[in-house]
Image (tube, rainbow, N blue to C red; front, side, top):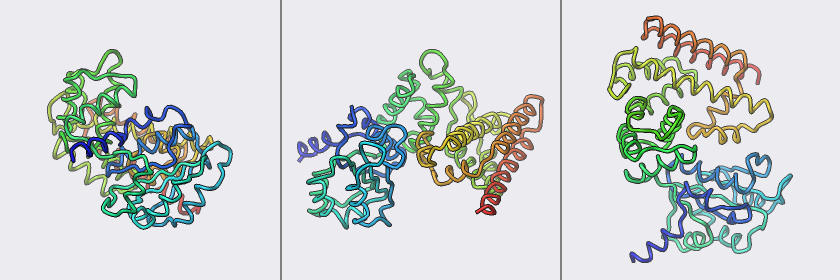
Length: 366
């Protein structure tokens, strides 16, 4: 039994190795199952397949359907339709656990003689392998594991994500980062965001444990993301409540937890500047004719992509410029002995209100 499990594991691709396994578009399998609950790994694997099969700008050759709403006929029609303005098509079915259970036999029949110009990508947190129809379908699919790794795997994840950015972490630095962010409880999206931040901070040489101690935000990544999300929804009350929790619980600055607003403020302003930079980049790509879902994928938006797409659609250059000035004024106020608590409250309220106004204006135009 152990040998059988080993063979199964060897035939399954790790999510972060998909790009390396697909050396050329011709090697993209006709069907893949991205299997697991981790949103970051699902998005990473999906993006790698799409990039290898269709290139960085897939356009109409990419179809994305929701499993609870998609019909078998619609999916098969998409797969059998010749690609428009391209050589291949990719059809993605999200949340496909129920879709697989209902249509496993028909999907296996299709994959026995698949369209030579299409790739089917099924995404599911889990599938019921007890049924013979599902087993038959799995035999025709390339399975990609999208399960979050254990503690040792998290350290390897840090090294892999740093390498993908052309950087490196010292061995003790990778372990220190995982431990500071809560060990096995950290989400891969939060861990990847910290790797990105620290890789940018270490301008020369590898990221060291000292850099991790000085700049990583112990226990704060999820709170910072939650604050950005509340602001993005225009939820003034929710954003203030989130800010209140952060001020009460504190964040880590220079290796030590601080509940001093003057120590917390630079970290939060950094998160808000990062969010604004994504919006500016996303809006610029949208004005150049980019598709919202492709923009979110290019900017590595792993969380609420619908919210991000709505935000860049309703943003204006004038509004984004005003937000930039607001953050710059807040930074200046903090450096001139301003009231850190009042500055943070003012920034959070004004940013959330700006999003609420933009959403209201968008609804009025509709």
